[in-house]
Image (cartoon, rainbow, N blue to C red; front, side):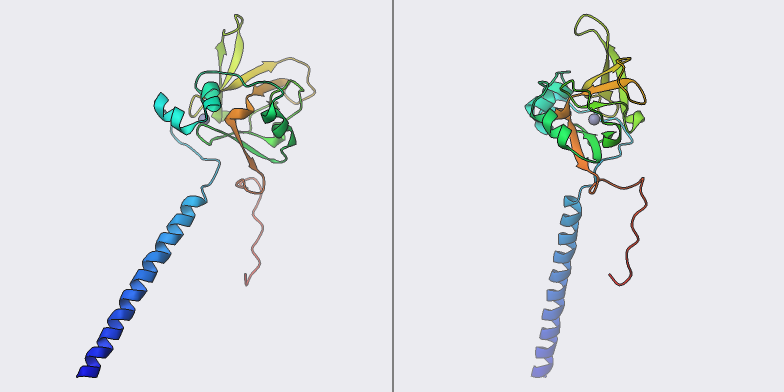
Length: 194
Ligand SMILES: [Zn+2]
């Protein structure tokens, strides 16, 4: 009788132990999934936040450009970093939506990141602004309405569109090709047994 109760105690102990282990495993997996946040994000709805939230989310410089239609200093650190970047996608710093890619990037030597077209046209919208006293075409993120820069046409650049999307690099996040989702390219087959 005594040994039987000892046995059941051992079983109970094992069961509790296994339960705790399972909980830990599930929690760890959840944590990992959270870490591997997939960018770019595909938003189906427009993103609206009040000013306080934007200030929390963005750096002061990103806030000044995205939310207050500011302009970064030309030929700055952001521009030299941009020029060195290889293949990849550019997402909005405000909402992580894909806007541009390295495919449409070109060197206009203007001091700001330049593209001849967006990579996802539906995510980029334009409007006319008169901030300098004459009309310019403002470029905005269509998902969060953030100010990105301006687009100029007919400048004679040897690009497929003759357009220059003059964009503030401060409000773009670069995702190198190897970590960007490869929806255009078929995924490499996984070799069996691995
Ligand atoms: Zn955005």
